[in-house]
Amino acid sequence: MSSSPTPSGYLRSLRPWDAALIVVGGIIGGGIFLTPGIVAQRTNSGLTLLLLWVGAGLLTLIGALCYAELGARRPHAGGSYVYLREAFGPLAGFLFGWTMLLVIYSGSTAFVAKIFAGYASTLFGLSSAWAMPLTVGALVFVAGLNLFGLRLGARIQNLFALLKLLAVAVLVVCGLFLAGAGHAQILAVDPAHHGTGFMSAALPVLFAYSGFTYLNNLAGEVRDPQRTLPRALTLGMLLVIAAYVLVNVAYLAALGHAGLAASQAPAADVMQMVFGSFGARLIALGVAISALGFCNITLVAGARVLQVMGEDGLFFRSVARLHPRYKTPNIALLILIGWSILLGVTGSYSQLLDYATFGDWLACAVGVATLFWYRRHDDATIRFRVPGYPLLPLVFVAVIACVVFATMRDNPVNAGIGLIIIAAGVPVYFIWRHLFRP
Image (cartoon, rainbow, N blue to C red):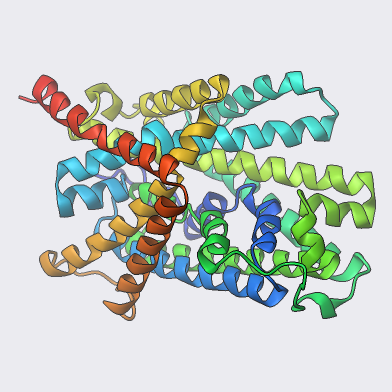
């Protein structure tokens, strides 16, 4: 298919490789450079740690396959918002968009922009006073990239994704072959750590894999979406799983399980073992690029949700307008970037992110659940269907339900406030319909 406009006015300009790299960029942020140390603290061996990363990756792959079918059924902008609206009604779609704007996308964007600022300061030897200007500057920069068409933004995003994969490759080579440690300790049991329970260890791993749904928000701009979406989601997820597992193997080879558990920044520690301070600065560059690429995708994907909500009358009508030349939802993009900057400047993003982090996976599970509705009510002819239906979607929903319940049990205050934020959208929805709908 060519770059022809869709019914909403978007241009289908994303090629299969562009789409696959969006999947990679939407998942790999700064977490893989930091999270494995936390997971090591909660496990008792390298084998257990690696099984968690492989298992969580396979679970996420199941979710990605489910979203591939959903995207093939509805190859339009909006992703989860569209699926929830059609399967469970406009209130469900609105609550997704409400939480996405208020907390999930904006909060995670501000949080990761802060990570970018920290590593950029380290890279260039800047004082802490530069943290806020760099945070705001990063958000303005990625927004500016996408005001002039997705094609330009996709080229920059491809560069970000390839550079972060290069950073991962350098880290793997250094950990496995140059750090001077033995490979025998990769699977060894660490007697100093007895573990803290499966769910406690699995939570940070699952959070590191979140973000695979972003591509579906851009489905209206993907060429030949029924063929491209399944291939891109599958290829992107396989690349992420390989990257995550190999990085953890490299950490264990270089630091051992005990050393990984004691490390606050394992990527920097491994690189410093090989190249000294230059290595630490080099990986700081990799993390900064990775963070910038993640912010780029969350803003672009979130803006498409707001634009479709505007079309439906569940957000300001002006937000539905696309730029007449570039076919980009610039008003939606500016609203999302403005709110993300406000969260970053006030510092409230961290609290909001803690309150509703589990909401992201909750939305994924509910999104996958819509597949059962589509199988019953939608007779569209599509090229791709989830293998192992209904077992695989049921497994995904059941596991994520356990994660959500475990989060609520272990952190009831933050989870409760997160639920309140979601529930607050209910009266807002009815007030909005009363004031702005005929």
